[in-house]
Length: 385
Ligand SMILES: NC(=O)c1ccc[n+]([C@@H]2O[C@H](COP(=O)([O-])OP(=O)(O)OC[C@H]3O[C@@H](n4cnc5c(N)ncnc54)[C@H](O)[C@@H]3O)[C@@H](O)[C@H]2O)c1
Ligand SMILES: [Zn+2]
Image 1: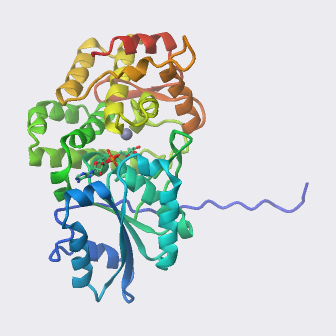
Image 2: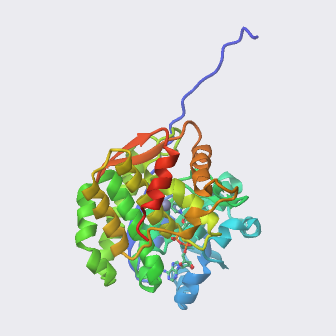
Image 3: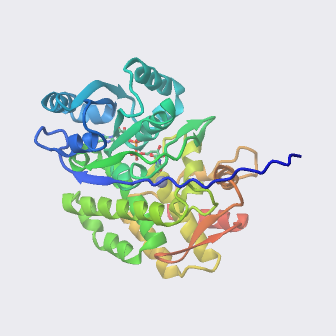
């Protein structure tokens, strides 16, 4: 006990969440990156160190030379401190050696809190480099160049980063808004078809929880998406990014202090499936199945009509996603379906009480705090396969 008064202050930190759209950012005539790097202070040359997804670098053999040429062209303002390639996809999020490597390079190159850590790649690379940027020196300015549809529309435009630990997705991570996100559409031109599609499912997800007219738009543009029509893909990515950023900025809980997580619709089963498949099933593919389960569940529990279920499942399938995976039947203990453990893991990850987003209508979500196990298993058995 003490007679001295407690000390309390509220702290409000304004963040600017900026997603900038461009094409060919490393063309020496494109001023965007130089503007972004030099916006904060004038004077000293701005130091930047790059981390590039190996898959992106091999699909764009000129990229490294273009970045070097860009910094050479703007050498009065910019100071390039290295370009490093890192493995693509989930393996980078599973191995702490990569984090250690990034920390060492930050230290060697004297990258300070006013320098820039720039990541170019898929969501997995952005999550890893973003975590390093958020934690080295307790936070270095971080610029993301997402190169997948999923990254440009969802994973890269948010405020989270993450790293897997003990086989659990994003067990380690932080909330750290990037200095800027630059969506360079030219990167999507080299993205393999399987990954091109992955961003479409996060767009469907955000449409289902927020915007019926966006769902209608995706439905009526499914043929154009399947034909890889550039303008349609760009519009989808832009609308998806807009919804994700608006939700984060206006929902009142950008750092997810509460338990409501609508942007994670369909994700409780998805995260478990990714893990059960040893990441053979990609995030987007797993989310497609997770959305299918929670859509059927919404109907079985009496909230959503069958016509909406049919529309949602048809669209998912039309865009080339499977709605079933054999991993859904996995039993680590005989008689106990392992996918169901995903619910408790999801609750543990979010904290607080279990909160799952379901659908009332297309574009209308609501939250429940428990799910009926038998109804989940029934929903899984009804998945189109
Ligand atoms: N932080 C968040 O808020 C958030 C949100 C959603 C998803 N995620 C994470 O994002 C990850 C999935 O990201 P993803 O779907 O972007 O996949 P990914 O990072 O696994 O990359 C997919 C593959 O595409 C290749 N690739 C990427 N861009 C390319 C290009 N332009 N040309 C050629 N090849 C290219 C990569 O090399 C890789 O092999 C998951 O780890 C997921 O957990 C994070
Ligand atoms: Zn997702």
